[in-house]
Image (cartoon, rainbow, N blue to C red; front, side, top):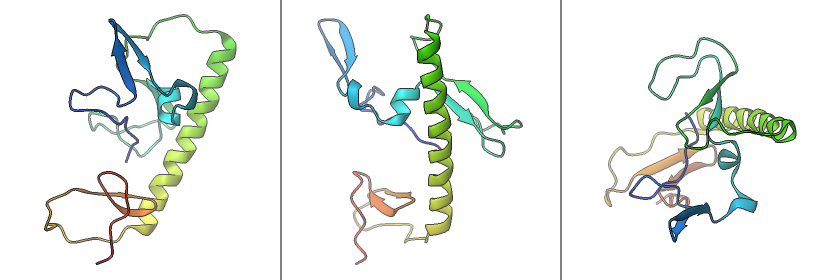
Amino acid sequence: FEWALATDDCGDCTFYEEADGQGACTVHDARPLICRTYPFSVALDGTSQPMGEAVDEAGIVRAHECEGLGREISREDAEALAASLKERAVRELEEAIGVRDNYEPTASERADGDVVVFDSEGPKEADGTPVDGD
C-alpha cells in the first residue's frame, strides 16, 4: 500500500504544465501532501520498497528519482519538509489500516471492464466516485 502521484499517459503529474519550455505545478499553493513531500517518503518497518524488497528498519527516509535532488535547502524548509513527511507517514498508515478494516471483496470482473480502486472509504471507480451497490 502506498500513495502515488496522479499521472497522465506520459507519466507526468496531472498538475504539471509546460509552457515556453518551462514546467511548473499548477496547484503549487494547494498541493496535496504527497506533492509537498516529493521526492521523499518514509518507509515503515514491515512495508516494502518501490521495487518490492522489504524494509528492515522503521522510519527510513527514501528519496525517489527527481531532477531537484541535491539543491540547497534552508533549515526552516528542511524542518517543514520533515514535519510534512511525519504527517504523511501517519496518514498513509491510517489509510492502510482503514483499507484493511473496511475491505470487502467485490466481483473480480465487472461488466464494464473498469478497474475498481479500494481505499479506506470503500470501493470507487477509477475517477474516485463511489461504486454503486447495485
